[in-house]
Image (cartoon, rainbow, N blue to C red):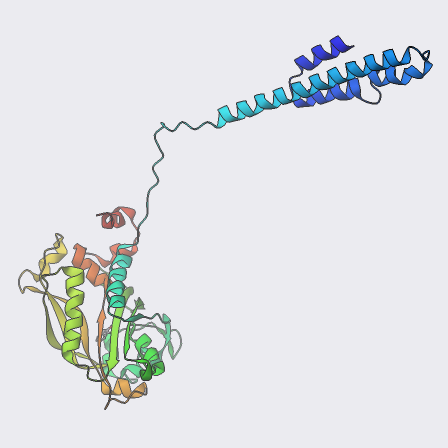
Length: 339
Ligand code: PHE
């Protein structure tokens, strides 16, 4: 029995088989238990001899079972490890890295500049009340200047904002001047009822800036915009301001940046005049301050509005604004920040 069992154990191919042998040989109904049980029929003097022999056999079989078990386990672990081995010399799989959208890059750059100047970045609703989009900005109902911004109306008094200026109106209303001057920019999407073409999109972006404090002058506005131009278009850029009209600023100005080389065809526009029109600005109209509950006799301010879409087109020579919204990776990949 011993020999036979030991041979079987040696041949056992897995842990299950080892366990089967254990149950079969050493179990309650196994031959060894049988022998030990049969001892009571033996003469008293033979019992110790048979008993100790049977126990020895049981121990040996037990040990052999245990050895085979751990042997099999070691084999299994080794096989598993061999299977999981990683060949570090194999070529890797290239993971394509994404990047912020080119418009996001321009917006980030402007936000960073203004955060550095101590401005707050404030967001507001894209679905806006007519009251904040127009009335509070000195554009009463039937004001002809509403034609400058063709509007998507949702109801009689709710619309898709045509500019980010309503965010300024909302912020001015709430501002507590005992805490210091109001300095903010509001980046975001705006909507106009334009037919999409190379230079128009029914949805585009604006970043508007607003400063309200005592003793604000046009020189503060010009200095700030000069910094924007240099940060985005290069240190050598100059700006010039031309008289213009916006309902919420007086005086108002159209701001041009001196011509620069950007490599693309879009840059050709400034070849003849030496200047490119980039943004609108002005000194906040007293009506706008008063409507927001700010005393225009004491406080004054400047505001400007720029379009990241237009900035990105100028900076990178993009000729069609729709390219920004088509999400064609071949287009977007050109603006890798890795340089
Ligand atoms: N909100 C204006 C527009 O969309 C731009 C602007 C903002 C002009 C602030 C002047 C001052 O036309």
